[in-house]
Image: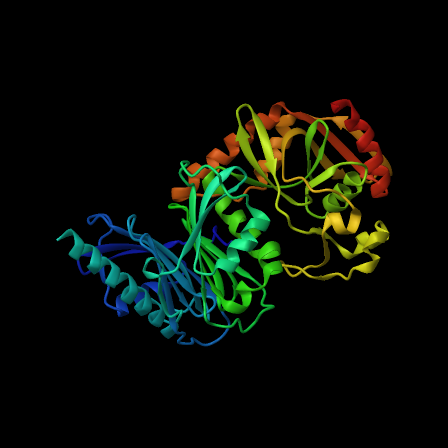
Length: 136
Length: 325
């Protein structure tokens, strides 16, 4: 199931009223996070309420903008962005994990990963805003 | 129904049924009543509605057609989440922390009863098992008068071949490859699924019954015979038993078959080594799986080192097991 892929890269971000602790094995994931609007933060100073893990896998081909399909329940949101990319989010625990493809794991930037993250934050962002409205 | 954005709780016309697997109650919901008929192939309907369910499985069928009915399945998991994709249109999503499974399937795959029996239900239960108190183990299991005999072996040893050869000597077959263990007071129960027995092509020389079958590509891409043990070998199936004995199978360079007692702790060690390690939020479930298997250390345990025809090994092991009766 590829559970054991090491994710040695970690960065914390501010995202609206939330703080995201993002771990990954691809520098392109971290740069894509900054590109889509996450603001880099100090992990030691700011506790994160969103814990996300994103595993990058080499695809061997140029990035493709795949359509995003969403399946959601009261508990979880599941996104697939093409056949080999997905992200899942637990609404209550606010944990998320997924897989993304990239041409080369050493790439510093990847347009496909930017597209992937935009799809993720569009879907998750709606959920988080709805939760905030319910609390109010 | 479009699959671009599917909100499960907003669907109407969902039918629900409480079923059990390995004695564990599961709530099954679907918008496609035909699937409930397949379910009865697999899971007894629960008659005790007052028991809470351990997991919720929602299987949604939409109007798409599967474009690649013979795609190789693709599995990935991270943290508490897992995805089993059977074709680009057909997938199971898992949140193992909340014990929730959502399946999104095309109409064409929904109608493929054999695919559900052989691939989809085993995958669903295999991934879910760890978090609902069931331990999937890489072991065959046959059932005799004294109870179940678990047969463990490294891959490639010939476990499935020996399981069938032994079962032909008057046992029922519960599994040839993957058995599901649950705790029952101070002992262990084993459960099986109604899946075909899988034998590699060279098994043909040991079993003339395979002559009327053709090996085909299996779920993991291997070419193999996948046959119903009742139809092919006249071996009855068993779905559930109490484990009485564990057999450790090993290939030997020395011709023949040598059987000796072994320590139950070694059986536990071997089974634990083949569990999928779970960490993070799921680590407690992994620890519970190990603890569940500890009573097997007190079970009778035999070591079988062999380099012989499966029928000869089965005969020797059958004779050795007769003391259990």
